[in-house]
Amino acid sequence: MTEDNILYAQEDGIAVITLNRTEKMNAVSDDMLGDFTNLVNEIILDDAVRAVILTGNGRAFCAGTDVGQGIARDHVEAGRERAKRIKKVDLPDSVLPGMWQLTRIPKPTIAAVNGAAVGMGAEWTIQCDIRIASEKARFGWVFPLRGIIPDTGAGPYLLPYVVGLSKALELMYSGEIIDAEEAERIGLVTKVVPPDELLPAAREMAARITYGAPLSIKAIKEITYGSLEWPLDVFGAEKTSRFQSTSDSEDAKEGVESFLEKRPPAWKGR
Image (cartoon, rainbow, N blue to C red; front, side, top):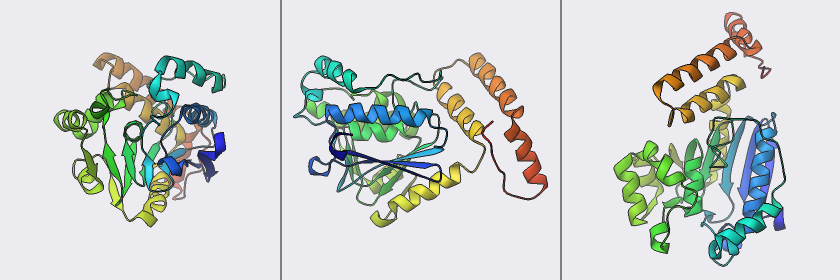
């Protein structure tokens, strides 16, 4: 990856992506976005990964796009150049929204927000399933202050489901930057912790929400995000299909046996 602007580690099934362009407050360059896309695609295909944590080094989570880079100057040309960096991969079919890289990951995702998350940084937090914030975290959909709309579209689509329509529009219209306490009050983040407790809290959360069977968790994520756009009859059919497939799995049998035998389950992911 370009100059180690993105760090990656995996331990015990928990992957940690760390934005590491600290001299630019982790602002996203076009090369960095290409590398990020490649990494997300690898994670989607890696069955050893059961949960993903996204965080930042330094005093910012992500200060948005780097306005000095092509990503901010010429979107069409930047897109062409970025495409050259993205490796061709065959991703499995999925009902998860393909528009957003993080939401497309078929495993739980947690944003561990260590500092300022503005612009694309704020968008990336809302693409994650769960958000945990350091006391130093800040959030801002500052796009109208730059004369544009939210770049990934996650804010207008997903943010109202998290904080409600009126509050989401207030945040996006005003471009106001809110602190961690306000983010917790409106339900944008699950919890706020001291800075040195952020990653341990995110890891604890990741371990807790992946204790269940991987196939079940994947199916829950799929029908939850799918329900944002499916009519009720389609949701019913998709739910029934996944209930049947998970019920027929080896892990469903293991779930019953481990319960009766009063022992921790040993999931196989099949």
